[in-house]
Length: 206
Image 1: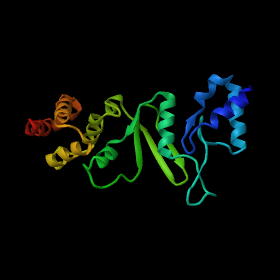
Image 2 (image 1 turned 180 degrees about the horizontal axis):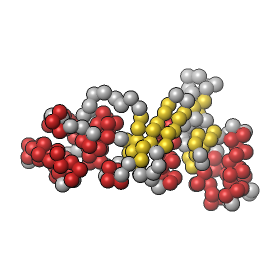
Image 3 (image 1 turned 135 degrees about the vertical axis):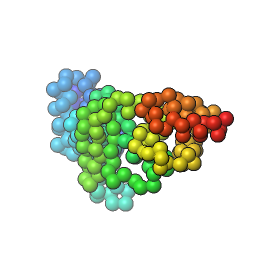
Image 4 (image 1 turned 90 degrees about the horizontal axis):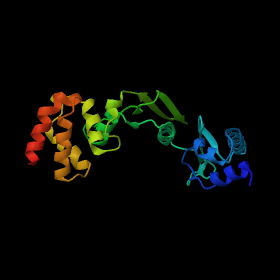
């Protein structure tokens, strides 16, 4: 089977509306032949190039089949990070909003990454990816990471303990797990100003 046929066959199995990287196809043949095959499929509108080296199979909108969705900007950003082995997490204000630590949603969708700053756009949807220090991305995809990044962007003086307790409830953690995370956060030097408040919450649970 030719490289072109192998690429087309694998592309046909990719989920519609979900971005994927060309990197995953290079095992099928030479870099040049795979790129040519992808370019041909894009010209035939079988796939859409949504970012450099990232493609998606268009997905028809259920209510209006003539309109096709390519991929969400957020998913493209995550695919980009995964391809290049960068860490990527919602920025602190976004994390705080998701945990109910602040009521106002961020004006823009922003992520922090260990990679370079980038912007991903799909129609009117825009996701900004900002480079930051690796220390801010610790505990990636873990509940303590979400709390940690939230607290980095908030003021201890203006954040009541009750709000932090509610944030842990949103994470659906057991009391034992909550105490473990509170203890861990207290040891982080970047949260020095939060130490007393975190200690108070921990003691209230013991």
